[in-house]
Length: 119
Image (cartoon, rainbow, N blue to C red):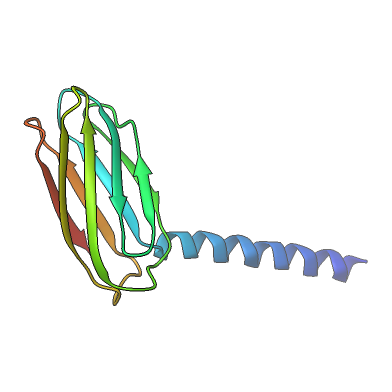
C-alpha cells in the first residue's frame, strides 16, 4: 500500500511539473496598455488559431498562452480602443522557433500599436 501511495504521488508530481514546464514553453501573446484608457479587446489572428485578451486596463497588461501553430503565415491584430476606434496591423509569423516565443504588443497613448516578437 505504501509503494502504491508513493507511485501515485510521484505520478501526480510528474504530471504537475510537465504541465507547468509546458505552459512556460508555450508561445504567448502579451499586451501592454500604456494609454490612459482601457483597451476593450485585443484580438490576434494567427495562421491556425485566434486569441483574444480584454479588457486591458490603463497601465496594465494581459497575457495569454496559445498552441504552437501548425503553419507559418501572417498574423493580424486588432485593438478595440475605449472610444470605438480600432488599431490594426499584420506581420509575418514563422512556424520555426515557436517555443518560448512572446508576441509583445504595446498600445500607446495615441492609440498606435507596436509589436515586438521575442524568442
